[in-house]
Image 1 (tube, rainbow, N blue to C red):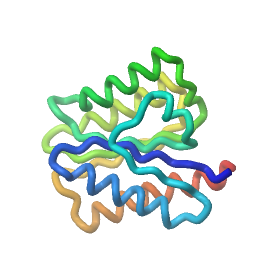
Image 2 (tube, rainbow, N blue to C red):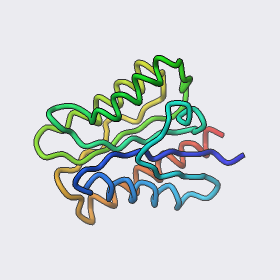
Image 3 (cartoon, rainbow, N blue to C red):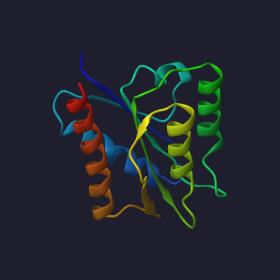
Length: 148
């Protein structure tokens, strides 16, 4: 079975969505890895993937309420993500804490192997920023292939 990567994102202005699409494109450059790009998933779905890459913008120094609720629900339901690969990215205007908070949750609550630091891009990603997103997707995909 092919390793599967989930690129889960939330985007209000479209910036994080552009980043998410670029991350997914990067995954697709690595043969033998499946990628799913979504903006909503149930906690149960998380465990079907070998790697979870989360894209979230920062609002009021925090991640979006949807993301927060997803992780809280997954924790309550005891969703097992131990040892899976986790990564985070996001666009921000001022502070950019959200992706860091996501990584902390993935690492501490779910015992995932996270890629630190998260990829942060201020405002709208330019070509250079999108290339970094593709690189993130590619790196995670290559890590999975070597892990398999």
